[in-house]
Image 1 (tube, rainbow, N blue to C red):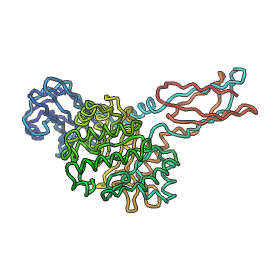
Image 2 (spheres, one colour; image 1 turned 90 degrees about the vertical axis):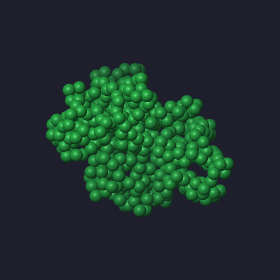
Image 3 (cartoon, rainbow, N blue to C red; image 1 turned 180 degrees about the vertical axis):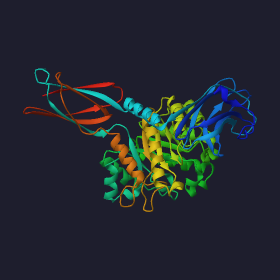
Image 4 (cartoon, helix red, strand yellow; image 1 turned 90 degrees about the horizontal axis):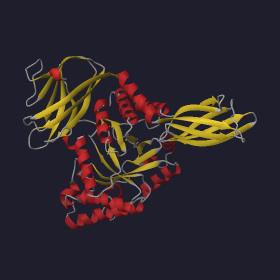
Amino acid sequence: MKDYWTNENQVIRSETNSYNFALNNLSGDTIYSFSSWVRILDADSAVIKASLKTANGTVKCVGNVIARPGCWSFLKGGFVLDFPSSYALLYLQRSDGEKLNISISSVSLQPFTYQQWKKNQQDTIDKGRKCTAIIHISDMQGERVPGASIIVEQVSRDFPFGSAITKTILGNPAYQTWFKERFNAAVFEDELKWYSTEPQQGEVNYTIPDQMLEFVRKNQIITRGHNIFWEDPRYIPSWVRNLTGPDLKSAVNSRIQSLMNKYKNEFIHWDVDNEMLHYDFYEQRLGTNTSLEFFQTAQQLDPLAKLFMNDYNVVETCYDMNSTVDAYISKLRDLKQGGIIMDGIGLEGHFTVPNPPLIRAVLDKLATLKLPIWLTEVDISKNLDKETQVRAKYLEMVLREGFSHPGVNGIMLWTGLHSNGCYQMCLTDNNFHNLPAGDIVDNLLKEWQTGVVHGETDEHGSFSFSGFLGEYKINVKFGNRTVNSTFSLYRGYDTRHINIQL
């Protein structure tokens, strides 16, 4: 990119206090991945954001990074162009609009076709989500058995893929059947939140979440705990908002003790203090260490559950300066320095128009922390409601980007069905007939599961196949002898050897 730097007035007027690259003849239907090392030369740190302005005046967010004096920071992101642009300006600015004083190095802009991008996703899926299995068949004397008939079928998936559920699933066999046929993970959309379990002070009621837990237990569905506290004042019970000092402290202690003693060992994760990058209701009133104390208490009360941060606009966009990927990492480090063993990274994923290279860049950076990443509340904004096919296409973009990234350990959709619809996006109508987004989910679930595999052992008495990680059942026949068995494919094996005797 060194040959494209300019601060001259070009076809597009340069932005104030910016570092500009003039680009000619950008291709349409192309995904562009951008990266640069950035070092700020001022005394203080600042968020540096990269943006793209096209010939028609459209401005796209490309990426951001917290740049610090005395060291280099890596800005990575990108953009998608659906139509060609004869001229474009890619520019770096401080997010606060102040004068820019930076050094940059190794600036790169790489174009990819959709086919190239999808092939890379598939290659990553084949490497990280699948495993080669070699089945060896022998008789009781250890002799190889060539020509044995083999049928292999995947019975469960290793990768957690689920959705929010609501209390409308109770006593609703159609909803229950639809859900359990598709998903192996769940999260309660509202029913565990403080405003649901204690709408009036002292009137704690866990009847609904208890009944919902019965459903997921019965169907062996793992479930996330969402959430213990929520920092957004709009979703804090009104009676709690009116408390101060010792009364508020007593109420929050009662809440966390009651909830976690009641549900110890029930949930695989806890979203401890929801959306703490955007809001700070409790810290404003109870002190700056309040969120740290929430995590400490949760760790003590339910030590086997994994504790998560959970926030929005980390992966959805790079316009929100409250929740840049670096701000998320900084908060994680603060909690770790406070003695918290952080177990997971929760990214909500409430998208409008997804930006695949930005999603990948954010996931790449977070993956360096070696913590499990979950997309916890994925949906597409209903502001695009009239374009259901477009919303379904966007959902597929997000799901493919998440599933193909080796750092992502689970995906949850935020598509819980209420009597009046869903929060932003539904997969079905009220009669559980698929909408376009539901078709996308069903097709991906089918694509990401090993179908029934038929085969026959070779002259060495062996049969091999590549399958998605999970649990399998196998049927082996030779002559009048039949054996049924089970086995697992899981991470850590390049090749899994299974020995079966007839």
